Amino acid sequence: MEASEVTARINLGEDNKTQFKETINHPNQLEQELVAFSNSEGGTIFIGIDKHGAVKGLSFEQIEKINQHISNMSSQHVKPSVAPYTQNIDIDGKTIIAVSIAKGIAKPYYTREGIAYVKMGSDKRIAPPEEILRLFQESSAMYADEMPVANTSIADLNLPDYEKFVEKRYDRSIGQLGVELPQLLENQRLLKSGTLTLAALLLFCENRHFIRPQFSVQCLAVAGTDLLGNSFEDNEPPFEGTLENVYYQTLNFIGRNMKKIPSGESFNSPLQWEIPRAVFEEVVVNALIHRDYYINTTIKLFIFADRVEVISPGKLPNSQNEQTIAHGVSIPRNPILQSFAQYILPYRGLGTGLMRSVALWPTIRFENNVSNQQFKVILPRKGFGII
Image (tube, rainbow, N blue to C red; front, side, top):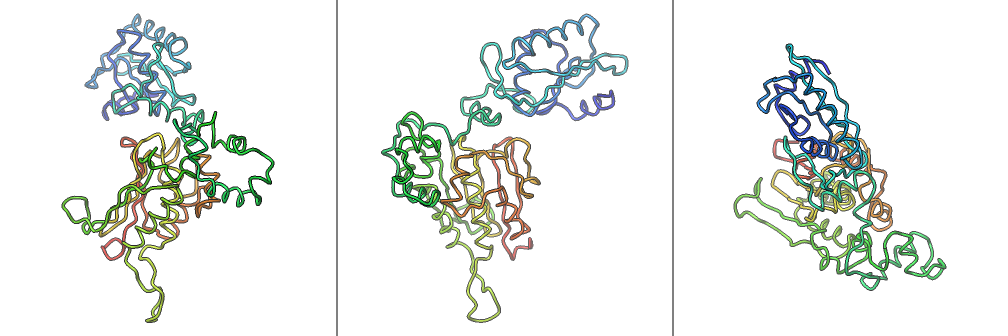
């Protein structure tokens, strides 16, 4: 890193990937920062610069002591260990240390006391339990859809729905497979030690809403362009039932609130939705299959006068962004749901759903809100100076 790059970073101030430290007085202070950066997107700690961005510099003795702290903290205190890259940089005759920490690939990382920190803007905070589970998911150590759901059992399954899936998936009945039901469910990662996994609950439990009501879709249609005022035209509580039931209830809500336009010039031309139904099929399935199920809130669908918004809990995973998903790049967040969905929902897989939506409705937009842990799909409607 050149001095000019450091100066440019100083001028921009602290943020989620940049932090200034005048010095390191307590080794534990450094340990927590290494953990927070590793559990987040990585970044750089500039030591020898105060919180206002003034270059103070470090003495030879300070540099020697801090580098020893870095070595000890990263290899012996942070679990699993990390390997930060350090560089001494001269800025106008004053020496600072740049400590670069990569985004961790073995999350979550903990301090010696067993505390996981994550970055929050220029500061850090202790990660709550649900965020630690997401960190496990990022490192592919644990997926939300394979987590057991307490106080559930095979008795909670809707067996006719499951039997229908088996016949479609294997072209034979459960009895013809030669495997007992509990073992079959275990093999498919739908059952763990007699307890249903989240995938089983979502796919085959009609009473899912009594156990996980937040894993549903809420719909609202308003006459205006925002949620202010009392211009609600149609709204629904969270939909009940299996993922398939929720999907079709959501499509029905959209259908009754979409304007219908003739598909041709003839008076008898059949009517079609102003935004093609196929676009919503892709967007809604994508939200149900790829949302973050570690976040306990519903998917929100808002129909405004000028647009439709579908808001999914959870930012895009790992290295994905708004451009990669539009081009069909897929990183499975819920692999069990994804593997089952093609036999239950109109889901084609391969990460191409949103890409097809772009082809069908080119004005579609995506917003990946990292700080609010949300992914939003925005579908502009015709006739409002947008299309």
